[in-house]
Image 1 (cartoon, rainbow, N blue to C red):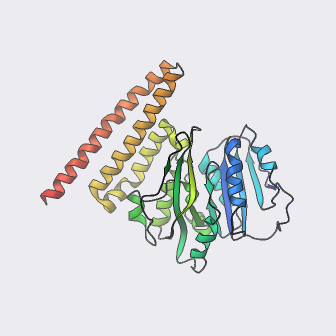
Image 2: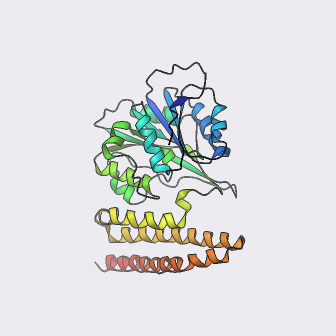
Length: 322
């Protein structure tokens, strides 16, 4: 594994100035999308930042895309092999020099005032106050052109119960965290194949770190045909099991038996959808054997979906009886 640790431009920014914010962008084979993400950072009205792009073993034209940018605030770290998004983000956190670390996925983009508005809210808060800032996002379905607006506002201060109830932005690109808090809780859990982001937000909240909410849309979350890790059914199953083992008991105590069952119902339905999409994709490509191998696990999750649904019904019946 190599780590270039180099700057990739010759702009006028002072390379040795310590920034307030370190922007961490992990990427893997997203040469066609990475430029849009980088441009959205360079277009920020808040200028006191560095941009750390972690190239996690890309085999496409990622390095050529990065060489097109001349701003010396950009640094690039490169691995010879792909190690996964949690590891890439942790490398960015370790290399960061700013007090705050802001995350951006390489297929998403920020609106120009993303950093400015969040830093305004955080500027007068000490380390004992808010250590996490988050904002609303707008989802863009690239295949259909559909735009989905946020339906909930974000909570502030002690948000553990809200996070456990599912009220959190579904993209890492909406979060920024004090670097000291990230180091305190150990960063992203690299053993989790997916769901490592909400696991980190929960650990921060459980540790007592407070959240600052910016209830404005400042992030565009692009949903596109290039598969995210979270769309891999096998990774989703493993992540679901690990998350349930770690947080199931806490969730049960915090939001009740019914809330826990509803979470299992939502996640199981989501995973079933991933399996169904995978089966259809294999069938379209003529890979009937691969499609057939998905069926037993898909049926197992179908039975879990039915069980979770029955639990929700029973919990509602019991609450009415009381």
